Length: 268
Figure 1 (cartoon, rainbow, N blue to C red):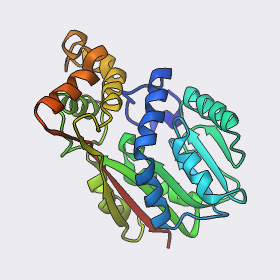
Figure 2 (figure 1 turned 180 degrees about the horizontal axis):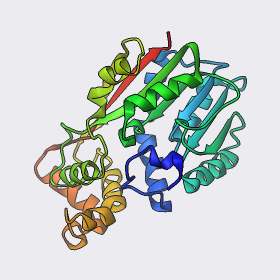
Figure 3 (figure 1 turned 30 degrees about the horizontal axis):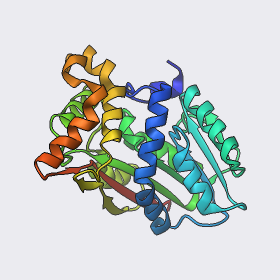
């Protein structure tokens, strides 16, 4: 494990091609929430942005669209596979105002400060999110933005699927309720009190994207089995999305995703 990776918990979802594809599909579902957060916080044309834990690149691509051709986005991730995937996607989409680096921005050094540091579903994997934000804020100019969007999984509903996810992530030191902790985390890191917003996916019948949840379980399955939380035969991942949808439709119920809580503050 390199120095960057050692700052983080064990990433139970891994960085397989299947997982990177799942991240891209999840990003499509969450994109409106993240766009609204960035716009509300003040991301705009000409800004220079650092995307922490860029994964497959979707948050960086969204930020690149908002900052325009005169802006710049730098995405960083400790996974070489994720960075390679993001670079290929940027080239395929001909996005020229974004670049990707391998490494953890908590320990990386940059020649120039940024107008904002952003991240979605990334602080939850840091062993010490307060220390991470404190160090990441050093990359931001005075008056610049610190913006993070994290899960609160407490009220997510889809039994037993969400229960499997919570147990597995918690067992690997992932903070599944960090969204609700963002306010005190920002304060403890020495930042002004952040503003907050909350969003979630909700749907009944065939409207909720059950495939995203099933794909997350597929990525988690090796760790779930290792921790004896659930066995592959019990999960039956190949039919999981259909079974979830059938259950919701039969019971005329709804599925509620984990809440996405966004927090933003300006560096004093």
